Image (cartoon, rainbow, N blue to C red; front, side, top):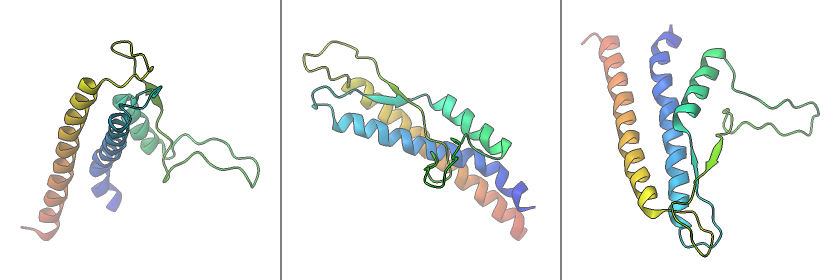
Amino acid sequence: MLDRLTSTINFQSEALVLRSERQRLIASNIANADTPGYVARDMDFAKELRQATTSLAAGSPKVVATTQAGHISNLVNGRAPVELNYAQAAQTNLDSNTVDMDRERANFADNSVRYEATLRFINGSVKTMLSAITGQ
């Protein structure tokens, strides 16, 4: 019964975690805008969300096989790690830094708005469930 109630929120919670991870990546890119040789990283959000929701439906995320007791799993907080892509440089730099501040600022603002929207969806779903449970 509780699974039915939380299944609607699982998709949004996965999206929220991935939005948070993407925000961290973009912030890291912005912080290293002046670091010589730094290569900007980003993730394919749609692909990662599809993988996360598929692994939720299948019951387990992709896990690297651990055959010995000393092997460390690739899971981070019970999730498969996010696949990161390298960003292409918009223009050549003498120091080989690929951070494009205009692109990073636009991505940061876009991701922030989507993060906020996802948070509002979750809050709305929880409020709806609470009102249904309490019968108001």
